[in-house]
Length: 345
Image 1 (cartoon, one colour):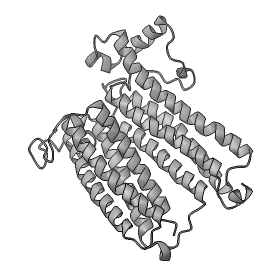
Image 2 (cartoon, rainbow, N blue to C red):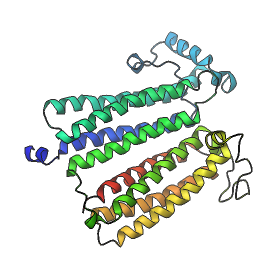
Image 3 (cartoon, rainbow, N blue to C red):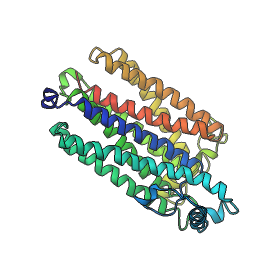
């Protein structure tokens, strides 16, 4: 173990970070279910510690239900909802927040133990501190997002949803990257031995991440419920309702625009992924592991595109929509692993 630490490696740290990454992955998927079931505004208070305990009595449930009944979402969308119906959406949001707390615990407790035992490579300590800070910031951003739907809206603001998901995915990618460095040691980049692959892989990673953000805007605007034909949009190549009053309203709040943008970038992702896979399989520079990752990127991107089309044409059924969100996170994870791996000759 000592030699591993001197070489910048620690298998125990890598396994710990992978466990945290899996919790974050679960949060992303459950967060998608929370949005799809309209559950995100069911808990109207932010209680980072005491909120871990759900309502335990009828009086507790009645209090939380009364708070929800004061929201625009209840008055305009769910008026007349019964207490059992409220409980069904409450548990989704409570579960999502519980996973957030669990992620913090799974990260913070082992971090301080491993730090005290001097099992974390010195060069990764600062990075783990940044990851811990990102996790805390994610909780604040989540509440900032929820607040946008408690006063004048019946759902959260799409741009805040995008920020919340984007930060979660940054944390997710950073955990994968850091875990790989902890397992294998720091990448020794030599341009003469890696060619253009590091730059290509990073550009592809950025493209996939951008597509995930566009997907959040589609979700936030419920844009998957319109123009449910493919490859056309309501029979047109370019949607008639694309433009709004200004650029921001168009890019962030136009249902037709966010769906069209998501479709176009999806085509670019698939073409790029197939190119990465084909070039990787025929590359004399990449190792066997890197080639396997590029192949996985191509296959998952193609499957994800097919799943996206099916989700759209069937008007966003919950199981398919959750698979689509999980597929996006898996593709992003593979792109991250590829971007790290190709830096090593």
